[in-house]
Length: 217
Image (cartoon, rainbow, N blue to C red):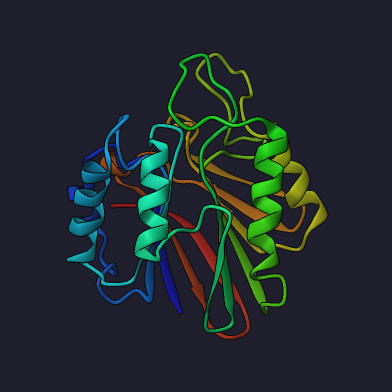
């Protein structure tokens, strides 16, 4: 089973065409920030463009996407924000939005709200053989949540959740400049950065082992 994931698309989905295996992947997971404070129609244009490459798309909002986009994804049956799905033996679940920022972006939530959403999503996949979290905000105090000043701005709720559960991997985003990998608890954490800059995560489950890698296209 092959899963391709990326986020921080910001209305520029074209780079996904360069991902070598995107058409044969079992699904694509878009990890937030499809738009820049955009509307339903803006987000839909991104999903439609990606659906031409692969018909199995899941998505959730980032902090730059409006609440109406979250509603639309639910109506479309592709939303992972606060939800989980089983793809074979693999449980995919998601957390959209972000903790508060200085920029007053459309979808910011308290750590308590983020934790409640995360726990609700996990309930859908907790019995899966393997679990992968797709979280727009990265876990706090890691290599993948630092802004240029060096300050850590990730989510304490995401970090605590990964420390307390047995997720195999977490794909995150939000902090464009913090491309890289880290580990929290048993989970390998990957921040591929912005899709327009070519970053994506490749996750493959062979029935016994999960391979999760940071890739560039």
